[in-house]
Image: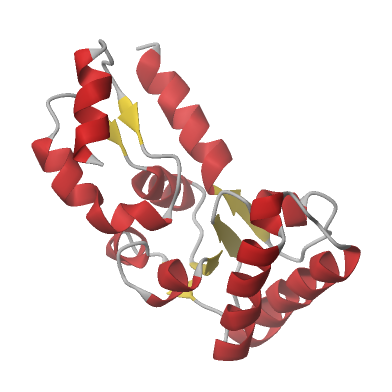
Length: 167
């Protein structure tokens, strides 16, 4: 990935963004080695959650994103508790991301299942928001009526990038 970043810098890029969530496992190393700013999708999301006073958020994403701490860490450090789905739900989410959403397929039954997962997390875990920690997840939540706020990492990251680019 650093080779790609260096290619962008050589081409004149003054700002870099990784557009996926899972690659953030190596974000700190990339940021340290880059000669231009790299804007973190995870930090942007965490800062937004803090500004919106989100106390406890559910995290949906790839299995890796839900299980590992790299995504959760900035939130926890800022005072936002992070809750992940139960193991069977994590498996379902990861499978639907790879077998449907990454292919642009959104089935009504998948939408309903995701809505049930978020509703259960709100009721049983007390989340007040859900983080769409995979850039394909907004596809499944376009028509859902959820009991909590939705934090779309792609949308929030885009807003931060535009702000940074035009400062």
